Length: 482
Ligand code: FRU
Image (cartoon, rainbow, N blue to C red; front, side):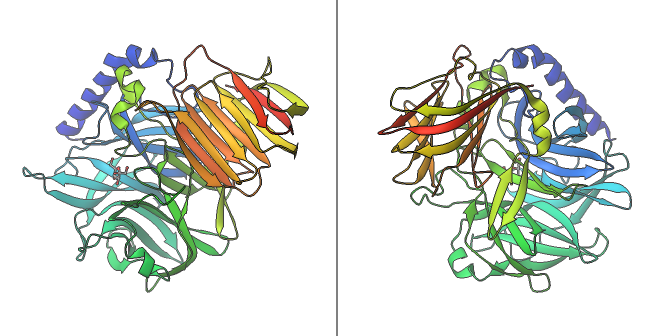
């Protein structure tokens, strides 16, 4: 470790110590989601199961609640539920990453964990340089930087970052979020035999490239993997305009499903589908675990989206990770489900069957709380809409006529409410994970997911149910979590 590295580490740990009590005194500090101990967390990085242990690194600015020269923070777990917060993995201590060890990924090779990340460098005038770098570890906890393995290839602006590496038929591939010289978002594909020498194969282009010609000015955090016999290309494009219910966050995250030709980098693919229908979701990253599951984490935040208005900032921390999700491909659509392991969190289960819900809002004495899982199974309905109100802070509304599902919340950034919606032809089940300041709604076993931060009052634990112009019959289950 260099002196600079040691110095940055001790400064970061000092911040953690200094603000520990203040951070922990925040009621909205989450109970079963991953957060930074102080400062700002953003993208999940280097998600991998290595020698049996899940590792999740994260973009971390320990020094304040804004963005800056990022560190890689580190969590590890043997079951996706109980996590330890481990030693800092990477600090921005070298000439090639001095303005941030930006996002990247992990692979296992030669029995080692290898991290690929973007070294972000800015000169005095603020001009950006970008280097794709390698760091290695024997044990998954202590890393040695190996330096730059990829310089900026021709044809791209310095907005070239977030390498995701994987192996396919004996070769290594890297996909990098990029911007072409005419300022279009791209995903660049590179290949290597040994993880050291990389060759750029060009951008992934395909059947919809005409339409995609104008699909945002920058693609961040790409990921590419095979599910069933198809490729899924996940990207976080910047610069899409809202279209009705779509693209209402400042930046989006979604995927294309298709077939990639690894030699030509051409991909025949379908439409872009947003991964999440809620407010805070960005920069997802996946890995495949020893059980063969494709698992995904995402940042429960969006860059530039009222980040500076988050109420936790006064307690010196901001943002969190989503829950992990297991991805399953059904036809051309990804279903996202909470992994089985999360059931370990369940305590004090209650169940109400054959509940009739109509115009008069009802609550149940034992169905309320702030850190809970709620499952509502729809059995029958003759109503026009069905609504669950969550702690007077958010409402989920299904409109049976319009076939839309809406998540409405009290805005933490401005006066009044705001909503996100999606089309849903039938509502069968809602599985809702509430934490002190977050909501994740898995609809119809993962057909759609809505994720959002909400900031209810500590005293309000009420969950209310109602239906309009008719009755809905459902089963309601609830567990406290932890
Ligand atoms: C996405 C992103 C990445 C970058 C990182 C910096 O949120 O902007 O493109 O590597 O965050 O923290």
